[in-house]
Length: 579
Image (tube, rainbow, N blue to C red; front, side, top):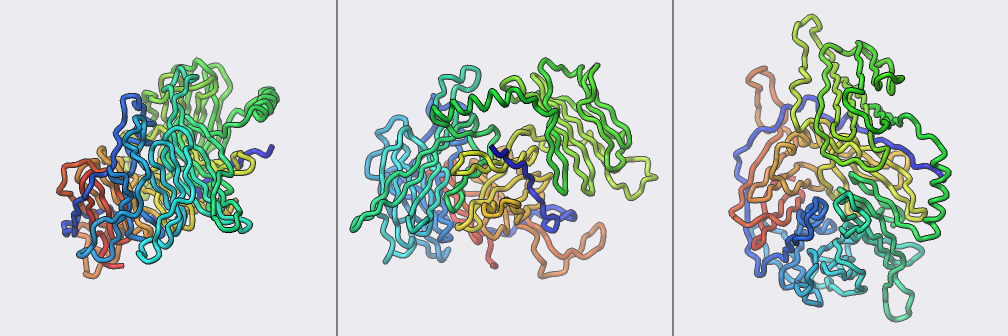
């Protein structure tokens, strides 16, 4: 079997701004409109048996406000009466009250183990809905937003087992046959998991296909495939043609095979066991080199030896040959090198999960980051080398001791994987390392959703290109310093950006919304007081405070507006007036 390709994300340097000076707090007023709801949002709170972090991430932090990316400034939510309500905005000063477009057929409140209802817009005329009790609805809507042609009609409805939420869905046509594929997310009890949380996460990939009939259009389930993992995925999306799946997750997912495939897998495993694992794995891009090392069991911090010299580094265990040894591509300030020991909050699993990860960045600021993880501790080795314009100065340009908590991200095993829908195997994998996942956004509804990752202090937006296997993820935008800014927001609940990525917004659990406009040219002359030079563009931070005490349940961004949903109100914040 062909192994998965180890890939890297290629950063476009032209989209980075090394001279970014930060956000200037703007006191300009933001127009904010509040609309009371006839019936409260159908919020479903976590039960006593939903106590894990995965339950909180999947259901407790669920976004109850759904944006129709095919028709901008159209948002939807489900109220306590089981109605799917729509708000369409054309003029901020004259928007109508939410209108009912669909009603769930049964009373879902009678189900004791129900989850929140979920909606996903598969195309401009198709919608998938889950009622939170285990039923999936496939609905043909016509052209949404047009009262003359819009009509929500159920084309498929079936009970699919335990309750779920819809993570993603797509509509596609192959060989003149229409199909809709959806990802159904569940957190299920795992009786075999005695040492862990006692739960596992499943993603069911369901494909519903049109059945050929003369006079009656009918849909049936064509395929049902299940993936399982031990953490809720940060990102999961089906490719537009239905042939593949991409997942960003802290812990890996794998397809659950039938018995015959399991036997084949065991035989393959016996052969694989005979092969000795390599000492290390590595991957390289234009910006960095990452090395991952397997360590033996029962290693303590006293067993690890690290040596520095101006152009050389050695990582070894006592009385053993070096694990990593090599000459660096440029000199480093070895006297300023430092390493720190931190408590490891992540549990180890199995016998070979002790990892050493070394990343070498050969950009303007050259650094080496080594993380050695074992049973109780994580050792972080950080080496800084800066191009000092004045090498004769006594003080170095940087002190590594000044690193802050938000600069160290421990989720080193987070990965981005692409699964093939036919072979059910991983074809591409990217080790994201310290590139922390931040949020996802839809830039083009015909493409897969984008995902945003932290890159140093910035946040980089990546667009999957499923039809380009040699460059499957494209860097399309940068939110300056957002990676650093969001780390300081302890009460953040949602993060979003519009399709034109002119700003990014962070929403807290209660009342406050922070807006970060990207640098734009100034209409007036402005000078930097300290340096006396003229400033050509400024990035602004704005803060909106909602007149509501209810917790925020939903948050969406469009090019001109922000939509904020609370239990009893829907707020509209005018963000951009010039487009």
